[in-house]
Image (cartoon, rainbow, N blue to C red; front, side, top):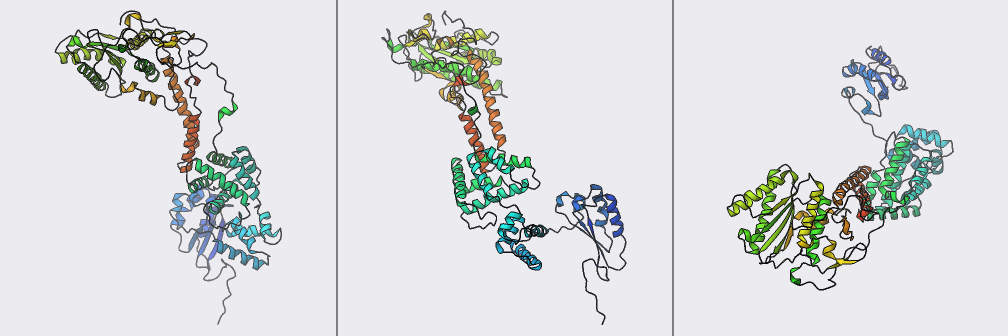
Length: 634
């Protein structure tokens, strides 16, 4: 019987064996060379039954060369087989990938890799120990080719031991990682970057080892799992404890579970291929930002106040003398103060002034009951608000009002109602009040018992005088016995300091309804507190005893500057949010923390904010000229 010569190698030409050809795409990537290969593939073999063409590193082929393969791989000759090998399948054209059968080969497992290394060492007669092989496999991974190269490097130092593997493969970096963790906990970004830049390793491997360092410490120190890592097993216990304490403190500060904090932090160091040095530095900078607070820009600046602070704030106590001839009919400061606060708040917050005044003498429209008169005012403000919403359905018109009930000499109710109505609807509002609300209720056309005064914005100074005249009219019954200090320190009646004309002054009388004063929700203390939130308190010339500045009109300038300050703060907070682009718990918590720190640096004293006008607390009142105060009857 004839003996058959055994096959020496794959690709030997023999009957029943394939004709094998290897094509190195990294060296031969031109379309002309691929066309020549296709020509060989279309030729039937002389002896073998098949031709096998292996194209290695196929992703190196040019686009034209890849397209030249489309036809033959889709409909190959009966005797031809093509094997395309690549580590980057995503780099191949979609048209070529769709014509292939995909087989993805896994890396060797740790156990298989160790057996492979032992077999190589025994075949080559190399001295080794188990710890050295385990470290080599952990450093290289499950790629046989890389493991063979690593063995060649290690054998230059002698036996394959743990010490020689660390020397040959540049794995002696644990002290550097420990020093980096200390610099991280100290928030010293400069030292962190220096430690990493001095490390003679590729950026991708540096990031991979940093990720491995934190993963190892997380499972051993936080999860308390006995997870052996040949590369990290020599880490000092003191370093691990310091790192654990520092990370636990940060997790507690951010109100995060420690495990969640660690996992989110480790995710920020996820390994990446083809990472250059600049990208690696940015990864380190972002990781430091997650771990540590941003530097305060004010630390390098010396803050100097350009103007002195105001003196003691206004604190009205009991009258220094008697309460006057009829003390029960004059108003204490607590009843008048809300009008002045609302009068300054309205232009500062909303940028508008009072522009309409109604003086309603209820006896003239046959309303003698004080409660009924109060209900009339409530109906008027409510229905006018509804009309304004109907006139401007596409917007939210701001309608502000305040009133005070008084009693005249005969005990009849008198209501002074001050309103701020959108400029474009001022005339329509007056017409509705006269011809609709009062005329329909009392069946009279051309209602004549209702004094109405209004001002528009065509004359800003006149409108400003009107606004503060309204506030003074509401304050006309202030107790004249109340004393306060002037800007010069002289004790003067408060009613004089507020500039209320003598002819307007008089007692409020006895009002027989539950509320003697009222205001729209937009002017009440809750609205003022909401407007002053986010460390944006309002200025108050009244509180600072700046009597000459009470009616200067600076509030409108302040409204503009407040809007600019809010915009600046929104932009600053937007820049902080841009630094924390992730949506995990750690990134969200750090972003919220940084915004909280940013807001904490906003000045609490409103005088410390940037503004375009010179305040009354400065060297002079140069922002606007004093206005002429009213002297005639209101």
